[in-house]
Image (tube, rainbow, N blue to C red; front, side, top):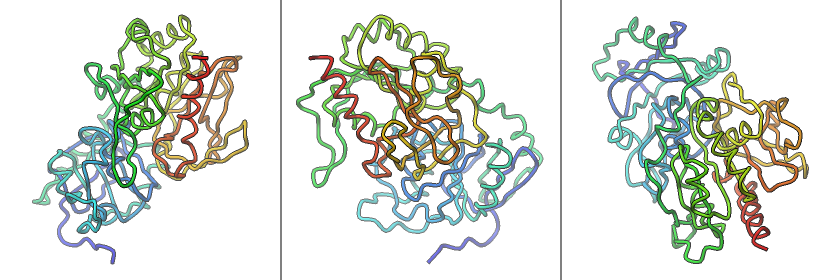
Length: 386
């Protein structure tokens, strides 16, 4: 049975235009300011909340049954939640899943993240589409007392994500090795004990399952911070370079990331593979531009067409900026496009094994529609080895 919210409101969401939503708070108490987006995925709320690409954003879940499978540490994509808050139609019920170790509400409370239920998420989603990722202030107060004028003022004062470099904030501070592979029944996470390829992964906000997918593809992975230089990368003598997902404005992150990628491409012939922000960083390094989208793509049901094979993949996406396909230079091909709006979802160099995609092949919504990209990366490194 759906959970019905009742009683005095204990949470409040105020949009910059003055619109106010009341609901029931859960998780942590307090107040946050963020950009508001919506996610259409039916599963994976814990992975979404811990995806570093959601830094600076509060997530509205269009699917109403959020929290019903509880939480487990195995599903975290980062050490702590990164998304600022979650907004749902019904407050979470008690979990019913054999893997659950904690309720969603307790999990959020321990990690300092606000949850808000009892919201008309359809109405809120329409507001997001019409206003284009609006700025909001969200408060959770069990006493039910809110300073609405102050909340609206805070939402209006929020500067937003344009021009903001958030990759540095979610990136690792120092390098580390990764050898954990993807979860598999019945043994869970196993270690990569016989890698064939040395890969350097630049961490702009990398999800753990991306690193697991690289390890499962036969890679020995060394993760470097977002600010790593070409000298840092090439000093490790890698067989390939991976560019991770991440949050914020790609133009801002590109100030230091683009020169490093350009230098690697100029000084080395190693294969390069990028995902999400890594895709945007590669595109900018090759001479293309990125632009802010109206409300972005966030969900696990986005159809993407491979223009070279005609195949359609069901993909997971999380991005508020996109590569401007009209700005792609000669020698850089558009390989994938969104079937929702025609926006760019993939590129490759015509004459080198350098490619990237906007979506998340490691998230497996297909479930295996896009895993070939990791295999393509491994095959390119194998081919170069000769």
